[in-house]
Amino acid sequence: MYKIFFYDRLLGICDDWAACSSRPDAIIYKVIKKSEIKNIVTQFRGNRDMMELWLLTENPEEAMNEVTSLFTLIEAAGGLVYNTRDDLLLIFRHEHWDLPKGKHEPGETMAETAMREVEEECGIAALTLFEQLACSYHIYKDGDAFFLKKTHWFSMQYGGHAPLTLQEAEGIKQAQWVAMDKLAEYFPKMFSSIADLLHRVIS
Image (cartoon, rainbow, N blue to C red):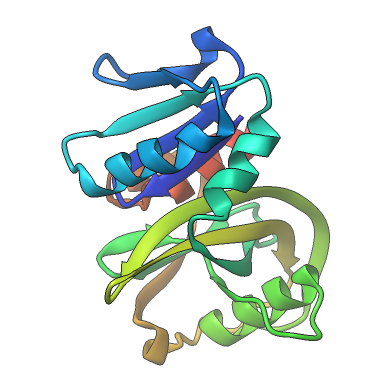
């Protein structure tokens, strides 16, 4: 299964009818030929009333590759960073709660990108990287062009006590450590792709 977020809308890909829909107005389109995908995705992209569209297919990976080919792919990496109390680091930018992340640079591994972006955006070093968790996907528009961003996420721990220093040039206005039992309070003002990621990787 794949979930691709277009701001507050969702384009999903799955091979199980029962697993596709999560809301009553969701549209489920059974893909017969790969050539159909371009047209239906174009319709979704341009129709704001289409809040949730699922492509039902026997081969989700092939369908995802076809969807990816319709956009300029941007790869990025970021971190789910915990302190020694197991609080999670959240940042606030573009009026939403987010996780530190950024664009992959040539010559870096995805893990190196994730570590660098956390250090740059939050001003903390001495991070310990544990494992790669999952990927998230979202579509965004810049000018007349549409981009698909694939973000690789890693779990990390910060063992220091230095205050957070925000990278204001990236639009970051706040950053704070959030206790896990308080995390649900942040979901209403969180990017949909980030909320979905946290629901998937945090038990």
